[in-house]
Image 1: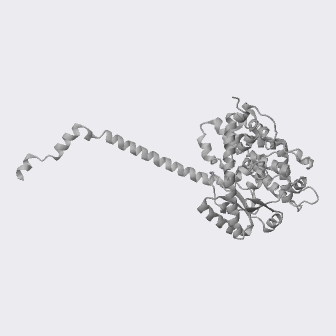
Image 2: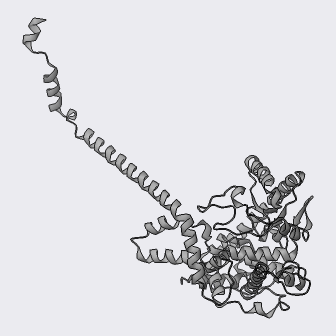
Image 3: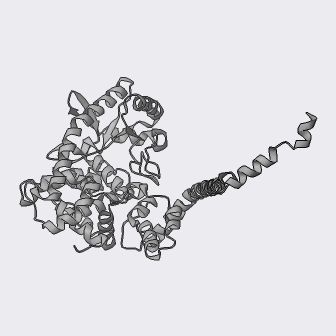
Length: 441
């Protein structure tokens, strides 16, 4: 089977996922499906893959069977996730905290079947001055029932940070205290005024307005490096199933009655630019429709951006859960090819680096953003990695010493003189009492 590069594999995934939520979409060959099946499973797109294949001849293929199992598993989790969501929201509401749900179920409800959009946690945004109280309640709930909530202080930094919110650098969940971000109360009040209540079972869940939610999804996609194709499918679903072009114009700051980008400030301009870029990607890579009335400027995204997204999809690896840089490179120091490949894989995150530096996604080179971003990450992570490396080395040296001591002891036992007849005779002669002394007794 031909091995594809990361970008080629990402292009096949984009062609497969493009319009997969619609009743009819393009065809894909069995060979291409086998090449991307693992990436689709790892990225959470397998239920969407089954939705695309369910009436085709590939539904009975090996990949189709795996996608069907993932879809059925997702359907079983839908009701459980909704119950968890209602429990958490009701608990906070009883304490006087009105939380706003982003991503997860808030976007899954736009899909033809909520099971097509799997999610593992509950992303809730709360008013900044209520964050500490909400965190205490949710930590207590997580300790007793196992519910996990990714709690955010305001809306502005959903998806921001050196690691994915809710996760540590080694892939473990971290408490809500670490994921909280500072957000002005005035900014919260402005966005909260545009939220809406939607029913989820017997509970009303508060979600952002369509334009605000589109902006949040776009920012999350870029700040996370765009490695997961399902996040761009979310944007495509918002584009096609939203309340028309007005929401998109408000999210991108175009039109007279803009609400999301109200002030003509640098921050608002940057947020609008990010939305335009991601909407353009959804159109180019996934064929998202109904954007013919959006500004023509978003139709021409930088060439490097599309290639970078496809490479991330082809690798399908969360950069925030990669093993620490220094130990990983030291393990490969005797393998030059793998060593250089590991360095490139850690360097090749131009989207995340640009977003981390609050840059614009234009046609300028990305190297300055990447250099500064990598230096910032090394400054934050290198001391911890060195300490961990020295501790690992001390444990290894101690283990080696103990192993050597144990081997010497076993060798001494094996070669000990008492194992032979000569030692028995010497022992008798050493402790035997002479006849001269026996007469004195």
